[in-house]
Amino acid sequence: MYTEPIRKHLVLPLEKFANEVFSQKYNPFYYHGALPNVFIWSLFISGLVLFAYYQPTLATAYESVSLITYELPYGNAFRSMHRYAADGMMIFVLLHMFRVWFTDRFREYRILPWLTGVIIISLMLIIGLTGYMLIWDQEAKTLTEATFSLMSRLPLIGDWLVSLLLVDGKLQDNTLTKIMFLHFAIPVLLMFLLFLHYMRITRPVTTPPLALIVLLFGGVVLVSGLAPVGLGQPPAVGMPTTPVNLQLDLLYAWPQWLLFGAGWSPVWVWVVTLAVPVLLVALPYVQKKGLRSHFAQVTKDNCTGCSLCYHDCPYEAIEMVDRNDGSRFKRLATVDPGRCANCGLCVGACAFKAIEIPRRESPDVLEEIQKTFAAANALSA
Image (cartoon, rainbow, N blue to C red):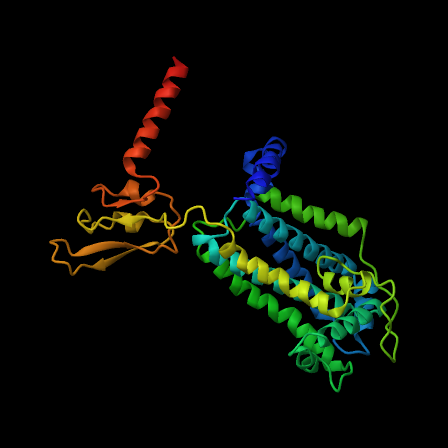
């Protein structure tokens, strides 16, 4: 596995250092999949407050954001929390993705969490981008125009996508309404994808310890107080503006930065933008599988249909089916290779030596255990 050097020389040392700083119980690396959920709730709560005062029309959007920022009590605090929680969630989701990759937990029976994770990150980019558009100051307006310009360069469906949001190629009041709809509707889809993301993970950790929740939430509040988000100039009326010195959040608007900041052509921007998720989806199939075909296998002649392996399997990889081979036993255990995690719990549950994992058969495992105990006893003596 070509990620092994990274795991050995970077990931594991960082985990060891975090154990010393936070203790093993509160090590953030052990809750990397749960930490983004803390930001989800911050985004939902602060977003509802902003939604209560936001008016999605070209004439009133900027004024409503100005009201939230400068006049509503604690309004800018909620707006700042919304911004920094969005950045924090994306950062921790990316860290989660890279750690899953480095630790080789994205293939075989974990492929569904990986694929849904790629979709979740892609949708998060759209959510964050639409959120910046809704501010509707001059910079947000320029970003919106730049984004629509980039969308129109997308082959085959670019013009059609733009026509869904613009009216006769122009920004209208319902353009902001549609953008706001996307900003609210996609998170609903995100919750369903999170359900699929967790579905194939045994006992998923979805909530970190209270101490880490307080630490993260306190960090968002602290940053919001020290560096509250501002509001730019009112949007200019008239022709689209040239995106000069456009300040872009690279977590959500890196394609626009490639186009207007780095000077890439629209073709290459779309090649890179589309290539990233495609490569991530293909990664589990391209990278060499270390456990190919090493799933649990049932010896029919030994299986009594007791179903102990079926009940003990945490990955729902074993099913009990009716036998029709003339055996005196009525049920037979069968293994779904796509769900098998090679954990060996079924082998330990079976009292009849009817199920084995070819790469690690029971006698070999028992011999290894006996040698380990013997070595430990020799050291203690």
